[in-house]
Image (cartoon, rainbow, N blue to C red; front, top):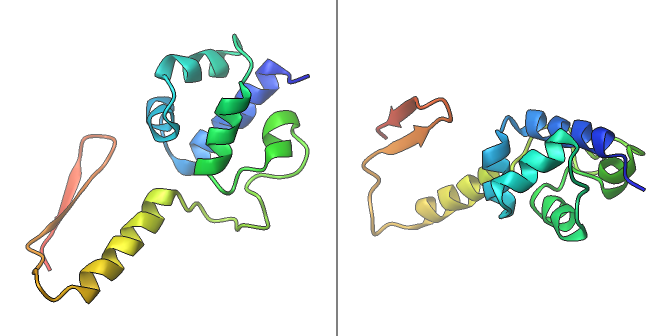
Length: 122
């Protein structure tokens, strides 16, 4: 049986590791924000669907660690540096842009969660 408060602590570790808010996390794994709130408060237990979505989106999260605290996080088999899938997607886009000679990049804008942004002109 899953201990709700311990599960909430482990879920908070995942959020802290990836430097994301509960709302962003909910959006990324495509669940309602209230579901994350209820899990983090210890009110609800995680569903199988929720756990599978977390494992699918974040490859550094180990099933046994998430469910019962056994094992380690981040999963040492995958790596210890934060590598959210967004970073992988950016690298793939970068490769596509490099191989495309039809269009020229005018600028790149990165928006941060705190409302600030950076503007890059190649």
